[in-house]
Structure formats: C-alpha cells, structure tokens
Image 1 (tube, helix red, strand yellow):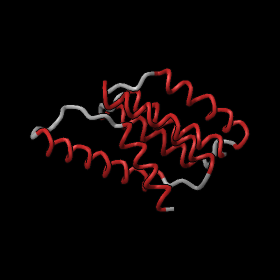
Image 2 (tube, rainbow, N blue to C red; image 1 turned 180 degrees about the horizontal axis):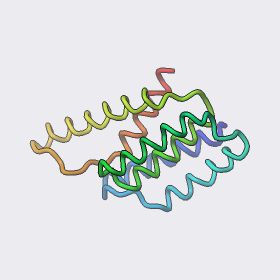
Image 3 (cartoon, rainbow, N blue to C red; image 1 turned 90 degrees about the horizontal axis):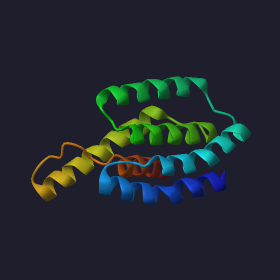
Length: 136
C-alpha cells in the first residue's frame, strides 16, 4: 500500500505541472499510474460495488459536463485506488473537489481580472484528495 501511495503522489506533481501548462494530461502519465493501480487491485480487490456504481455515474456526468478526458481518466484511476484501500466517501470528495475548483477559478479571476474558459482540474483533484485524507 505504501508503494501505491508513493507512486500516486510522485506522479501528482508532473501531472499538475503539465495540466497547468497545457490544460491537458498526457496518456503516458496515466498509463504509468495505471500499472501499479491494477497490480494493487488484483491483490486487494476493487472495493464496495455501490461506490463503483456511483463512480460510474459521476464519470458519465463529468463527460456530459465537458470535463476533459484526461481529468476523467485521472478521476477514474484515483477513485479505483482509494476505493480498494479504504472506506471512501465519493460525495465528500466531490464536495471538496468542487470547492478546490471554485477556489482555483476565484484566484485566477482575481489575478487576471477575467474568468477563464477552461481550468486545469488536476491540481484541484490532487488537492481535494490531500484534504480528504488529512481530514480522515
């Protein structure tokens, strides 16, 4: 489990930097993150099925809301990691994610004096996970 957490947080920085720079998450980062994720899923299992159903509905709704596919894939990998490891509340995490994304929009709007058309969501995803686990 320590290996998985280390890999997840190790890859968070380059993913955030790339997403902030180009507002895209390259598949190469997601593929590298998927390898230890699937190894742990084989060993530990996938976790509660109800959470996976909610995860599926959340991911489908994010696609319809226009969230980038790299962000959707990152959310799917992250949910799978944390759902298999512990009792994970997707609704609490989503409220943290919306709060972090709103703070990102607010800070960007205050600095540039205009609202962006798109934002990099990876920093909000990783910050929301860090806040979620800090509060547990």
